[in-house]
Image (cartoon, rainbow, N blue to C red):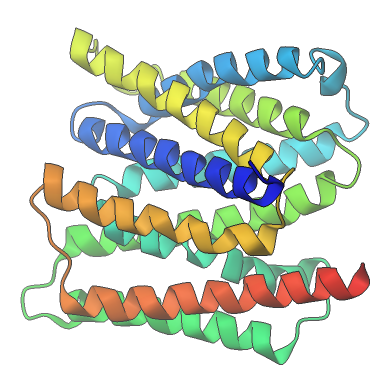
Length: 295
């Protein structure tokens, strides 16, 4: 098996496990509080993460850090993004939540220009505009309908907040990755989210049924495995090459909506998805070309 094929296979595997995680959360969205879901998702993700770090002989040595403040900033942004993401699934189809989430790498371009003083090319700004246009096309029919769908707009607001917060977390990760172990970044994030989720125990946690408990545990295990597979994929192939395979999550989300929730996307969804995916490809390809030139 070639190195490139290994990277692609691992990235597709990560996408499958991330889709399963989101599907489990969608099934729990109407019955289990968001904070409780965040706790189980993060606490049980620590199991595969720690096992992976032990396998690579980076536990506990790989958890040492000289930048605890940067980890805190990354964890706070990522944790808030997780809360917003899980909450949005109560109001949105999986496919809509997924496509709005694609805005995160596009918004990271704008944040990098402001916060990191990076030079942003015209092509990347074009990507930002394409992404915003895609979201507007997706939400305007609901925003201008005679019978305003407030629940849908709440879901869109939460998904957009998730995208912005995720973009901020990506900027922080980019800075941390220069000096910190990738396993440490993932471990501290999962630990912080578990503690944050546990902190909501006084806000309406429920006693789950055995079926719900199984789904909660599966959210953490699938999320942890997905993160490991994604990390490994970048050891075998370039980020820009693997970016296109992230869009399989949209295919999987549409299939899950159709199979499990009897939801089929409207025609406008495909136009919105094309614009947002196009925006992300512009950003990814530009980054890949810049990295190759630097090399």
